[in-house]
Length: 317
Image (cartoon, one colour):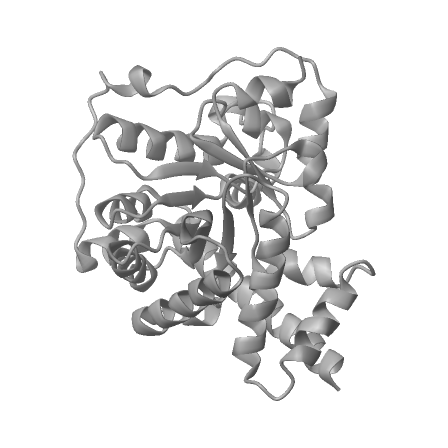
């Protein structure tokens, strides 16, 4: 049995890509996208016609509307290949605007519905800022499910649990990157691998909090740098994995044991946490890694959104 098949026994496997032609061979349940992945995909020859067709069909319409239609077009192609859900991201420039995030999310859902897609198959991805979490709270109350992304700290996860969001995506690899960079020459890769990896520890803490206190929000580890991070989180509700790492899992027959289980955390003596806005902002500010990586992540998604808009404008010319 491959490691990928073994992982499927206790974790929902999700494909993290905009290259939907790669998806089918790994048989994931769900798929996730973001502006960076869509940008990468539309620069491939096989997807350039999709970009061109979408832009030409909507020529003269506002750029943000054309962008949402492009994202939904990719989402629909992905949904034809997976039995579960696709995550589609709201423009990261709206990360600090609750009302605008809600409005944009509702439009994305309406576009999916116009294509015959049931809203149960779509997760709206939103950055886990205070404003984003509040937008997600409102959307969940309206039956629109959300995936809170760019998550780097327990305080973000706690606030998402309070908001009853459907799913959170803690970023394993980006946490690992930050600590490795901070350590510099003193970083010991072997000592900080597996369960000791700082990104793995972060996801395990979120998982333990949710399961210990009966919070229904799903935990989906994301942003992996190596197989060790994935195998150390076997048993997490979901893991979203890039195609190259899915390929490595499929090619390996090394033993894979479950690392996380709900019953294993029930006896843990964990504090019950709750955050209002001021408490959330202070807790996030106290975490230098989370503060820096959240800001950096938003900037990166905005930069790639601007590049994608530039390609759309050229396609429309």
